[in-house]
Picture (cartoon, rainbow, N blue to C red):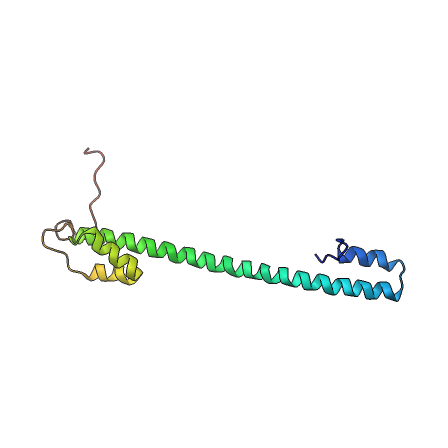
Length: 129
């Protein structure tokens, strides 16, 4: 909505001027419209910037989730393989998904839960407890 220097919308001013007016009124209306367009142009650019930031924000949020989930998964896998949680967390935080792949490629240490129980833990039977 374009506002004139008087604070009214340009469409309303135009409707008021349609009834009658001189060329000076038309020139003044054009000047007001140009000034209003300049002001709204800045607002539009800011609005576009907000939209772009929002799009970048969504992508950044997805990348943040990917980073955190890969770090947690790498820590869990490294713990099961017998290397300790810190090793996996370090790989996951520094190298993101590549770190998770590296931890998955590490061989399991002898006696680790990865070697004894297998890659995935067995579910406990709730009735047995």
